Amino acid sequence: MDKDLAVLLLIVAVRGGMPFLVFRWQFAGGLLCILADASDSILQDALGAEPLKGHYHLVDKSFDTYYLFFEAIVAYRWLDPLARWAGIALFALRAGGVVFYELTEIRATFLVTPNVFENFYLFVAGMRSIDPQFRIPSWRWLIGIVVFVGAPKVLQEYVMHYREAATWHFVKENILLWR
Amino acid sequence: MRCGPAGPNIPSQAARSQERRAQYRDPVIRKYFECDRPERVRRAFVLLMIAGVAYVPGSVALAMLLTGAD
Image 1 (tube, rainbow over the protein chains, first blue to last red):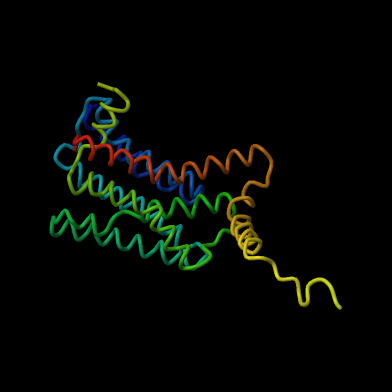
Image 2 (cartoon, rainbow over the protein chains, first blue to last red):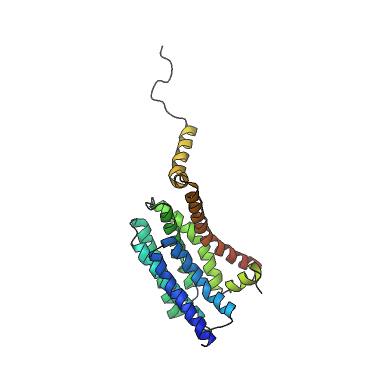
């Protein structure tokens, strides 16, 4: 089998299959989705194939929205109304931003619609794995949580999506020292 | 002449503040660590992952900005 095709099938299998785990393990499944998100760049580099060449951002964004949708379904089932509706609103903001960007290609969209949902989801899912009765006590707590998990995400969006920096290459060469 | 406090025992400002802090801390942090050791380690790991997932990529992004690597 052609190496590019094999890598493509592997990427599709990993990124397409992993989100189903959030239905069984809300928190661990969410973490594995992040690993799967990083896996496409790593697999392409490690196996020396580029099946997504030229379409990487579109494919990556589509799979991102795909797994966030699974997490949004989980969030919709949470009994805590503050967590549930904040989660749905943050997902809608992000999904709307992705669609808007694909239509207009205005990169500043990602700064206005950062993916805070993912960090918020992991916060609530993680707290629920510690205490199944966990609830966000008040609006003030909700705002505090969104700022806590959202602030680093805005910075990350600015560097990765607005300035289009190659984060994986920076990590690989300067942190992992993998040359 | 009557001795001692004239009315109900009103706690001092410092005592009230301390009590409020204890109430604030109890349900949020201490409650989550009142369990056996393996579970305590698991919960600490979950909290670490929640913070790490948010702040490790954020720190990498900050490092890229500061070093001009982007």
